Image (cartoon, rainbow, N blue to C red; front, side, top):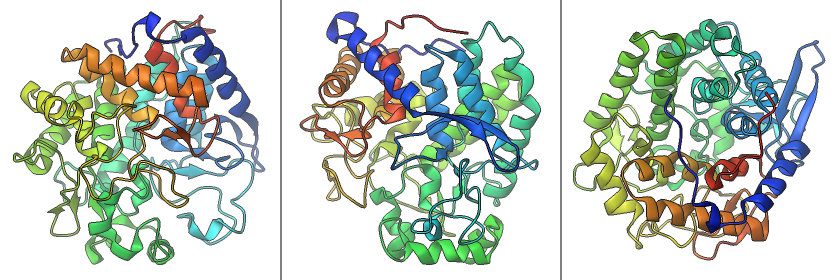
Amino acid sequence: MAAIRVSAPAEAVDAAALWTAGEAVLRGNWREGTRGDGVPFAYTCPAPPRYRHMWHWDSCFHAIAWRLTDAARARAELRTVLRSGRSDGFLPHTVFWDAPAGWRRAPLYATRGVFGDRCTETIGPPLLAFAWELVADASPGDPGFRGEALGELATHMAWLEHHRDPDGDGLLSIVVPDESGLDDSPKYEPAFGRLTHDRVGYALLVERGRRARWDSHALIARHDHHVEDVWLNVAFALSLHAMARLSGDASWTLRATRVEQALLDRCLDERTGLFFDLAGRHERPVRISTWSALSPLALPALPERVRRRLVEQHLLDQRRYGAPVGIPSVSMEEPSFNPGWDRFRTWRGPSWVNTAWLLVPAMRELGYEQAADRVVSSLATAALRDGFREYYQPLTGQGLAARGFGWSTLLLEMVGGPPGIRH
């Protein structure tokens, strides 16, 4: 694929210091071992001890970061993600490699039972094929890696289409807010109500899934607590395009185009230029502006006028997403915007590094270099001051929540200047 150009001018930040700190985070969070049943694993904890398990999209981003300095570990991480699933193509959102989740949190994980399970029965943003291609491009010493998992990746994509697109409209659905990775974003309140991630009713949502044995077709048919999620489908389209390039099979491009056209036809709000989720059996648009509504910007095949409008009317607007630091996860115009730390909520305003990594290349591609540089240098400055944090206060740059957060090392690519790759 074409190179992802996310880096800021070298003189904008102390790239060497950032690289030293970032590599230390990745190496400190690395875990290897063998599960009790003999299955080996190698992955990066998002931020121990709070986040010590393996999360699907975290590991995809970790591998993308690892490929800059140690492509062997990047490959090992993605192979572990693939190994975590079932033969039918299901890949779990969360995997407990070392031991099942502790008794205090286990009942709230979307597992088959209350205790003792090794993974959740829910999905995560389907980024594996997308990450696989990027790591393969950085792995000339292991040329077989590019094609070694094509069959398993294809089975995974087929599972998603069969189980998460029951109406066949080209858009995948989530049945639990966590499946998008955006947990308690305010955009889920209209769809899930008292069953959102940050409310006590969430336990009822998990228990409902267990009673249905996580049959998504049944859950979607019987209840309105599900969403055709914009960001999840952007991730799916990115991976479908990656499958086309990995395999040389143009049919994957046709499938990606179908997802993109569905986003344009059914989720794009012409009045605002944003892309909104579709909630429940009646697929009602959820008109709340979050970074997810901007995420189709990461799809180069979308019409340029649509992508430019996302940048010019939203990303550059200082009343909306043009914050001093990074890209806020919720528009600053939204009543729900909360830029600070919250014990029970995360995706309600702070700026995250992974979202900037996804959107900055599109900003550069469309010619908004100065704005892209501002996003990168502001996050790099915050990370040099407060470390690689889970997220940052978009108005002040204060580092918030977990320390030594794995995917925040995506900043290494954004500032440029890798010291060299071990293949």
